[in-house]
Length: 194
Image (cartoon, rainbow, N blue to C red):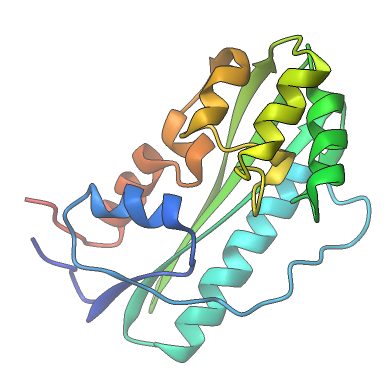
């Protein structure tokens, strides 16, 4: 295993889901909080917004660690062109999940890998269909607390699996990090896995 011309591999995130996905690669890495604002101009399409945010996070960390290869990622949930962010409280989580009930929505995951002389940014899009859940089911799910810190108000890798009728796309991307795209990008940057 080698990181090519880079001294270390950094994940510009504090997400436990992203950390778990990275640990599965078996590469030495560490997490660094990107400490950036997550605002984009109003009306920015979700696919473009996640690319901007992923690159912004990666650049912020790369600026502090110029000899590292840095991975940034961001996600947005979109329903009929409207973006759903991270709910602030249980009431907002109930509203978001209620709006998704019985419908198909998209989750866009931006991925950016940045290092000295290297930059690649891509977006993965998956489609998810939520079951026509009852109010009691929605309230029960929100009571689990899994909505906290999650765009759309759900966590697909945990109890949230039970709210979906269909999931189309890269399951790892839905969890926060499109691993097939990421491994290809890391190889492009000179990382050797074996």
